[in-house]
Amino acid sequence: MNNLISIKSATLSEDIAQQLTNAIVQGDIPQGSKISEPELAKQYGVSRGPLREAIVKLEGLGLVTRTANVGARVIQLNTQDMLDTFTMREALEGMAARLAASNMPSDEIDSLYALLDKHQAHLDANQDEHYVQQGGNDDFHLRIIHASDNAKLIRLLTEELYAVIRMYRRHTADQRSDPRQALREHKAILDAIANHEGDLAELLMRRHISRARKLLGQAMQQAAASSQPPSIHHTSNKNKRGNQ
Image (tube, rainbow, N blue to C red):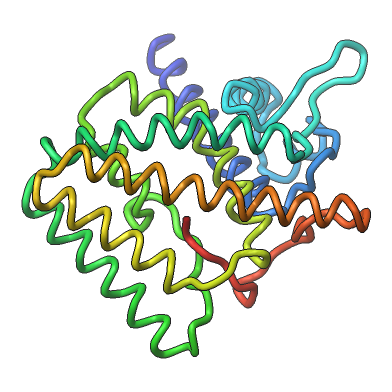
């Protein structure tokens, strides 16, 4: 019975952690805000135990920081952290693309081409409006990461970097330019993977992320100069978002 209770508690805390992650990434829980355990426990209808476990998970994901005598707060995005994060992302996702060129099954490659066709159709139908930032099975980058078939690499990217990367990608969406350029780069990366050209896939992925890092850096520096944080207001489905 105790084991059953433990499993249920773990499942509940993981579910809460996922909901809180999405709320932070989407801006529903603002950057820099203090985490109120009583308020969140009431909001999600859970006890403090599973909630505290969920907050610990968020701390491990880099979305929350904890300070003595202050408690937990949502991170505040900043230029230097973005540069550090995306520099690591460039190297690791480049490696993932190289490995995917050897390991990705043909049916998954076909599925990714279909995903890019869907993105193309969205641009055609919406006057080049950025397609909505997706996660999970609709995230081009995440699927390549998993196709690397390297458990440690997947853990580093998805458990330690991915949530923060999603924050930067979402909260600077309005500063991105030319969604068709991002889509062309995605297609070139996938072509290299489909042709089992690992060196080329890694090079193209690194270039793609390097370009994203430069665009985000410029946007954040411009925002800092004007004392206005870039797109950190609460977002809605009407906001334009890219996928880099």
